[in-house]
Length: 266
Image 1: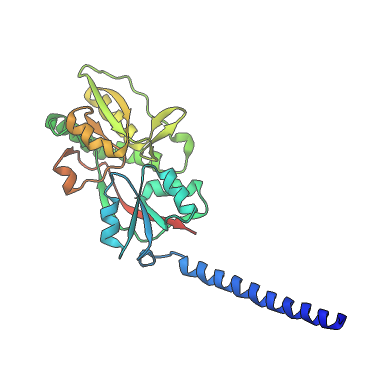
Image 2: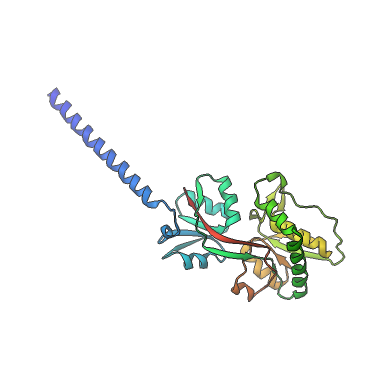
């Protein structure tokens, strides 16, 4: 009797080990199948995009049978990606690099989905202001100031990432500047103040033109309506110039050239 029980236990132990190995092998295969290394691996997958951005159009243009999920912040998209609710999300390349610094279990796909020009969006009734901003931007490109600011904010030396201080001649009044603070390195919170590349560039422009700068934080999907209504004069937060947006607002000359990439899990 005891011998029969021992044989039965031995038999069940073998079955259990076989079952366990099968489960582990299946899980391993499943994980390999879900690894995303190229743009084509995103076909038929779910991608997160920022509400109000052009990223949904870019995703549909570049990924076959993509499913779109909308989010109001990058922190929500990071959480959704880590939880497996989405397979990746789109963002600007400099922004993606900042996200990866803080999230070592995420990665950027090598292939860019687009190559784009970024610029300041301007109230459609303020063509004179557009001309003034373009004049200073062209000067900044020629004297190296724009390159200097790009290297400061896109670089790795955090100690240099502070806004330049200027003595303003605000005789021309105030430029109301709208931005989204969760868009590092273009605009983000540091020591309870909004800083970043776009903030530093418009800061310099205001100094050169004789305007006081007032920075107003708002959601990305509220920027175009705020410009059209006159609530704000200018906006900058990695805004891509598109033909559709040109129908609603004016744009400055580009202040940065980059592209859209995909962040996914390692």
